[in-house]
Amino acid sequence: MLVCTHLSQTATIMLVLTRKIGESLAINENIRITVLEVKGKTVRLGIEAPDDVKVYRQEILVKILEENKQAAAAGKFDPSQVGRWAKDQLQS
Image 1 (cartoon, one colour):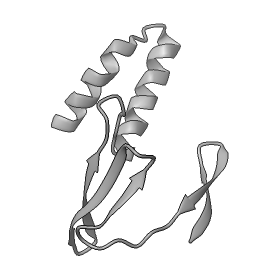
Image 2 (cartoon, rainbow, N blue to C red):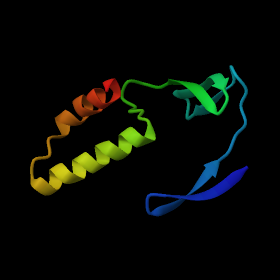
Image 3 (cartoon, rainbow, N blue to C red):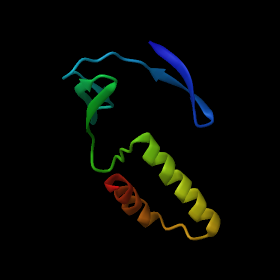
Image 4 (cartoon, rainbow, N blue to C red):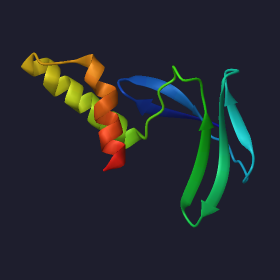
């Protein structure tokens, strides 16, 4: 099933899939997402991806982008600190 949705400022197509525990989906040949567990409305996913592919929860990515925008506006943007900031956010 394909659903049209708006992410960012461009229209994209969303592929909607149904998967059972233990089933996976593949993105290209190097990323695999597997359903590990379902409890009520919560789904645990396992993500296998190369080290150079950054995987964030959406709310963390939004915070990173906001921090980057604020730092760039202040003229203090240091891209080398983004990974450290994300790690700190995940630990809190």
